[in-house]
Length: 44
Image (cartoon, rainbow, N blue to C red; front, top):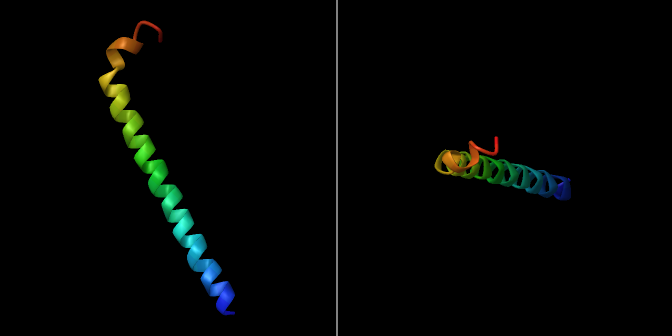
């Protein structure tokens, strides 16, 4: 039972970490798109 609880905690931590990384990546890419939107408009 103790192993299951530890596995559950680890799964929650990993999931939250992945969500945080995905959110950070999305915010970074959206900021980069706003900055470099003038360069990429010609290429579509």
